[in-house]
Image (cartoon, rainbow, N blue to C red):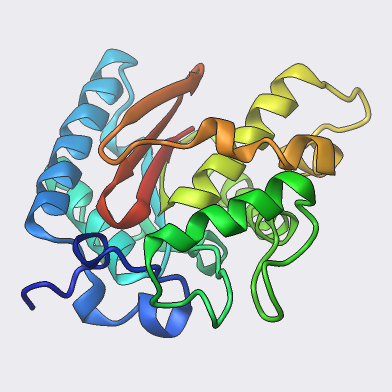
Length: 230
C-alpha cells in the first residue's frame, strides 16, 4: 500500500495490534536493506566457517521484522517455516503507550528524555519502561541460550530493544559477576538504573551493521527492525 509504511510516514508503530498489521511491512528500500543484511551476515558466517545448519533466526512478531527475517532466510536459503526460524514475542517493539501510538517520530525525544532521568518509569500508563523491555529481553535470551546453544543466532528486533540489549551486553562484558554463570543471570545483575539510562548511546542508524563484541553484530533495517548475531 503506497505511503502506508511507518518510516515513510514518520509514525510510531509500537503496539502488537498495529505492528502486526500487513500494511506496516517494509517499504522497498527496507527490503533492499534486509537483502544486504542477509548478504553481510552470510559473509560473517563464511568468515568464521559457521555452517548453515548451525544458524538460527529469532524474530519479533511485528510485520516489518517478520518480513526482514523472511528476506534474510531467503538470502541464506533457509526454510522460513522450518525449525531454524523462530518467532519470539519477547523480541517485540517497545510499546510507548496509547497517546504515542501512530503519532509522529518527533515524540520519541519526550520518551528518551524520561528514560535518561528514570529508566524504571513508564512513558505513561500502559507504556513500557526501559526496565520492562530489559526484563523481557532477558527472558528471550534465556530461551535462545537454552534452545540454541552452540548456534549462530540472528535476532531480528527493533530500535529501542536493540539499543537496550547492547547496553546490557556492554555492561555484562565490563561487570563480570563470579556468581552469575548463565547469560540471563548476568543480564539481571546489570539491570540497574545507572546502566539502563544510557541506552541512547547505542542507537543504530537505519541500515547500519555494527559489531559490538566477538561474534556479536547488530543490524538495523527500515521500520526500526534490527538484527543481532551472537
